[in-house]
Amino acid sequence: MSDERSPMVRLLWGPHPKSSRGPRPALSLDRIARAGAEIADAEGLAAVSMQRVAALLDVTKMALYRYVPGKAELVALMVEAAVDEAPPASDPPHDWREGLGGWARRLVTVFHRHPWLLDATVGPRVMGPRELAWMEQALTALEGTVLSGAERMDAVVLVSGHVRGIAHQARAAGPAGHPEAQLSDTLGELMRAHGERYPALTAALAEAAVEGGRDQALEFGLDRILDGLGLLIAQRSAAVPGRAGRDRAGGPRNG
Image 1 (cartoon, rainbow, N blue to C red):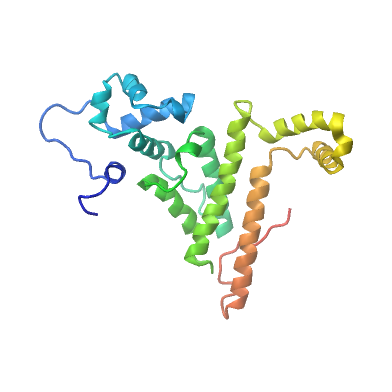
Image 2 (image 1 turned 120 degrees about the vertical axis):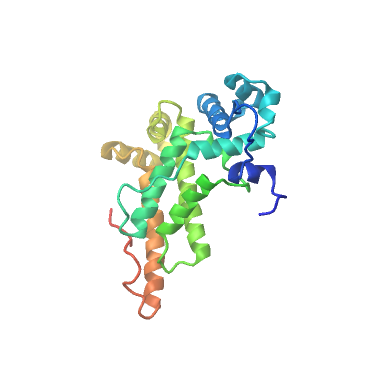
């Protein structure tokens, strides 16, 4: 990269110039980022400002600007601090399905821990090394399959979109959590009064209550996505001479 890189790229990717003279800097980019993340964790992304972060760090806003040009760059640094290093799977995955499914479950945990990331990670933007490491991990799980590069990227987008949807619902449910249970309770009250107008919904809610099938949306949706990918991989493999059986396991599962 040239010296004409944007401030965002320089902040996220470095190298960061170090002064060999004078006192040690009072601040660091990591300390600034984590201060911003602390505010966002407690009050949401909208509560973050250069002034609030400066006050938390006990410095002036002008002192903060010597490190970070503005809020957009601050939020990018916060994202890097919050996602942290992409954690390895507890055990080496035996197949693409295990690897991608485990990645999705770890990602939803990050969103639950830092709900403001849902707002900070939308649209075209510069991503830092830690965030890209998460994408690398998901794509690595699909290496060796017959999916093309574009299809592997699309598969990761599809899985991450499902994870984000579940995390959005959890955030909307508030500290009590269990968004599906809350929705079922609310709908149950309505159906007791108006159920004759919505017989299919009434029947589905009644069966769900008997089966205890609540708050399984993450796993249900994830399994269906992985089933579909498994079907595509199996069909492609069967169509390529000598390919069948060479792809790592991970076809549709029962249940």
